[in-house]
Structure formats: structure tokens, C-alpha cells
Length: 211
Image (tube, rainbow, N blue to C red; front, side, top):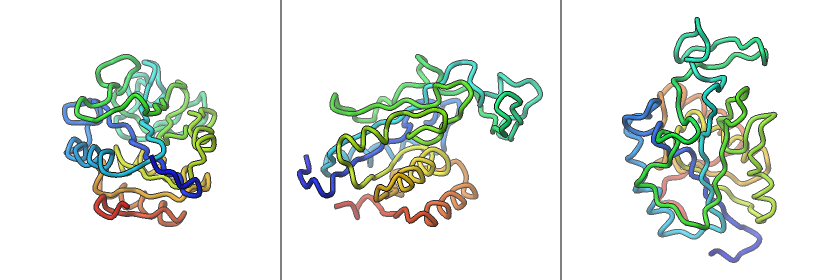
């Protein structure tokens, strides 16, 4: 492991779960192509902490189209309970199901830290840090481990990866998105997320540029 306490590094592997990969209920096109690259990063580079994030939704989750008669898939729907506009998604990553499991080809280790998000039925937490009032505890974990720099990979670029990067930067970490180790749902939303990340000084690198 890296020993320079002044620049301890973490890798966040965001939501590489079956439902976001090919044949999943909310698949990202060609998602599995990034898995060998993520595995190579683990093998060939040193990190002081490796975190795997995962959607872990109850069946009655607010983002599920099936729970809201009259809503339309992939479109915002106003939720009276929380007074928010929520994009409606197919049921995905339901707690304890195959779809919520990490992809079988993703390398894991006993030393990995796993954070689960979207457990609160009323909050759709894209970020691995959680969305208020949900808090995954990730920032506390980073503080405890004296993390200074964060690298982010996984699925999907324009939603959970980007949202995690935004929160990472807002929490004061030097933040990198490894662009060839993530995939987006759509080009238009990818560009929107890239602009948000640029505005908050996130950095973008390819895996071959990683020290």
C-alpha cells in the first residue's frame, strides 16, 4: 500500500452491478467493457483504500416506475411525499436480488470497503456519499483513513459516477474521473455531467495516465 500520508489515495468503483450491465434491467450499453480495465488498475496501481459502491434499493423505492401509477419510464414524476421531481427508472438493484450483486468478473478483495446507497425508500442517492437525508458514511471513512485524493470509475458516468465525483470535490478531495473506466447512459447527459464536474475542478484522466 502507498505510505505517503500526505497523499493517501482511494479508488471508488461505482455500481458495477448486474442490473447496470448487459441484460440487466437498467443496462448501460457495453458496460462490461470497463471491467477488465478496472481490474487492471487494481492490479497495477497502489491505493490506500478501495471502495465499492452499490445501489441497494427496497422494493418500494421512490425511483421505481412500477410504484407510481400514471408515471412514465425515464421521465420526471412529482412525488407528493417529498415534494421532489424524481426520474422514473425500471426496478433495479433490489436488495438481495441477482441484479444487485456485483458483476462476476469484477475483482474484489476482503479488504474492500462496501457502501450501499438508495436504501432509504424516499431518496434516490446517485452519489456513493449518499443524498440527504441518506448518508452512506463514505466521507467519514475517508476522513478516518486520511484520504486526500480520490479516483472514480464505474457506472454510469452521467449519473452515479459523476454525482460521486461532485460530492468528492465538494468534500475537499482532489478528484479524478478515469474516463476509459466508465460508461454513460447517453451522450447528452454525459456532456452535462462533464460540465458540472469541470466547474468544480474535477480532473479527467485515462487509465494509462494513472501513476
